[in-house]
Amino acid sequence: MPHRAEPSPKTSSGRPAVAGGNPAFQQPILVTRPVAPNPERYAEISAEIFASQWMTNDGPTTRRLEQQLQEHLEVAFCATFSSGTAALLIALRGLDLSGEVITTPFTFPATPHCIEWNGLKPVFCDIDPHTYNLDVEQISARITPQTSAIVPVHVFGNPCDVIGIQEIADRHGLKVIYDAAHAFGVRAMGRPIGVWGDLSIFSFHATKIFHTVEGGAIVANSRDHLESLTLLRNFGIVNENEVRGIGLNGKLSELHAAVGLLVLTEIDREIDSRARLTRHYRERLQEIEGIRFQKSADGARGNYFSLALEFSESEFGLSRDQVCEGLRAENIFARKRFYPLCSENDCYSHLPSACSEGLPNARRLSENILTLPLYGALTINQVDGVIDALLRLRSNAASVRQALA
Ligand SMILES: *Cc1c(COP(=O)(O)O)cnc(C)c1O
Image (cartoon, rainbow, N blue to C red; front, side, top):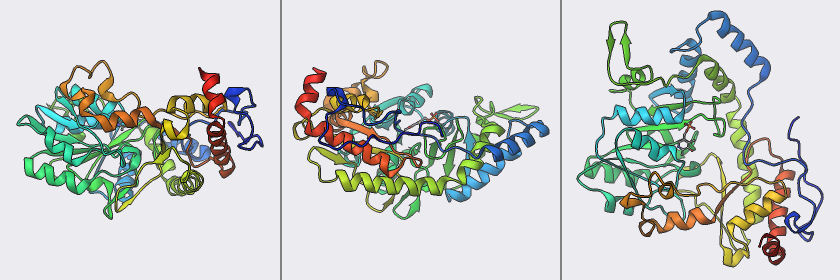
């Protein structure tokens, strides 16, 4: 087994590695690890695909995966794509939008990039400091006569205020396209996540909870008017004699679809295991001063995609960056996600809505957030090793600060 890494037996009274102690882990503990498809089954299916010589272009494996995803996600429409980015590009293109699109700066760069690639203008809106998702009150304040859509993100799999967002969209005649890249298997207000808004997109990248190595999907609650989206992933080709719409190559291959079929059989177990590990993290860290957890949306069933902690430097004794470096010395690779904010990158910082005075909650969160290792194959023992290392940093804060100065 690669990456096997049990924590060295050490208590929170020992010296942190950054201040001269031994690292908590001999092998690196990364923030995530992809679910591995069964290799024998993959060999069988890929041999069939090679023998059939139908490698891509709406093949039987891709269709089977789309059918299974449609059932699993309880949606009426599911079209796969070569990436979440391709899915979002085409979702926005297919809805024929214009002008301004309201979105969150606290996301992966693909979200605003897809808006820009469609010749639309991203308008950044502040987030709720507890759920990390778009603040519905703030959305209203950003609507202008040019606004045509909202692209909210279910950050770390925590569902947005789907009812509040729909009310605003209905009142102003706006489309809603959810970036559900993190939210595979999530439910909001008792309903599956993919039924909300006009469309949702998923990413099936290997770092996501369900994956096809690279891949993505557009899903919706109705099939009406959506066949054109499927054409656009294949250059807009209708048949030998007709091209309808400026499409691109956004197709999932048969080999990627085969990975998806196998990963889908593991997904419930993966989520159960992450749920158990998350409970353990919470039990041990809940009462620690200076650490805050993301607040789950009311009526949500989460998928435990990510374990995000918000640090208060004054209460914890160390800044987020110091904690991150301290953990790295222990061979624990936490991630500053999402830092910097999308709006702080050069390509967006000139926009009026990127001005940090308008985004105080997003800015504060981005500076204090850290996601810790969480994946199904992690053991409780390893989680204890991560927590012990974190508490050791806290109880030796002065010497950690000194070592990092
Ligand atoms: C991963 C991700 C994407 C992009 O998906 P890809 O499959 O990598 O193209 C988009 N939005 C968010 C929020 C993501 O995390």
